[in-house]
Image (cartoon, rainbow, N blue to C red; front, side, top):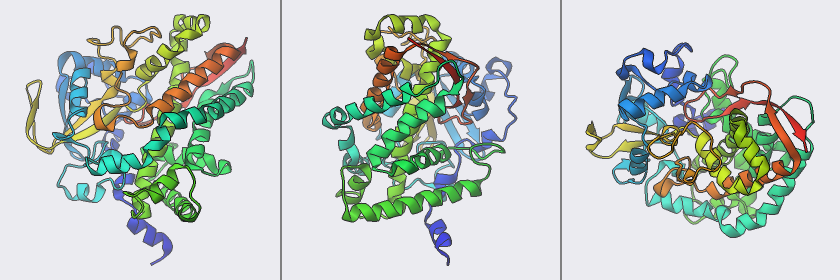
Length: 439
């Protein structure tokens, strides 16, 4: 067997299965939420997110059916939770609602496809005690002392990137600012060669990419081949850090008491989690903030007039953007939510993007309000034992970005509507054309 064939046999199939593949095959001409019977509403369709038309579907479900049943041949039974209260309750009850079956919609439990598709080596898709043990291994990276140490580097890089932006010329904010800043940060946390840092962006992009002509990847085979490259690259880093340890995430995993004996493929699961968590989420919120302030220019004026609002503005932008649309749980037993009978092994999608618009908690939730009094109650970082480990790092990066923007720019103006990612899991931007005007 060749080296490539050997690696193929070690790759977990789950990495390469799209959570919304069946819905992606539907036409892009998705009906409006009120143009179809309630039982046919299915917010999972990635066309809704690519076309930025998801808001109405969640608004209808919150109002009429907040625990909404759907069933697909590829995934079996699943429930869409769209209210803040229900999402928080399920996210906080890991004994009843397990993460071990995966965090995105997948094949039904017990099916042959599910057995081949179980995620491996990613502590976000585990329950205690294994989850706790593996998470603890990399938790020092988000310790307050580490954040204090790394803040000057984040600020220096942010200032350098912003100072390099052309004035009066249209450029892509996503690539020039959001990707560059988050990829530099990731490379630092991994002690990854800076000259290769865009590989991290690429690997992050393809994790949940749906193969489509002209898309991020065009075929499942291409997706698999690129993950082989990722695996090979990190195998070299593992070996280097075994003998040359540092103060980075790879070293922590290679030498951690609960992770040091894991095979490379299982280490890769945790690394992909950290790459996506450190790249997609912060990067898309950096882009979403610029877009939001352009949609609500009165809020841009408030920000420019009073930089003291930045500490409130950061959680409000995170709430409004919600970079990961949902997380999945699986019922460990028969249970009930709002009178709906949830069966053992049913999947539940906790739609953070909807909970963060819940009018019962967030008045005028579709509106950006940088003085919102309870923006920090958003669910974008999850809740309970899986609360985002890197939340403080993300908030630090976003705070510094807006502080440095305030010092430099009188305006950042969106030139045309952004292009959105073809995904119902990652709520992201692929392009955001802007022009800047300096103070």
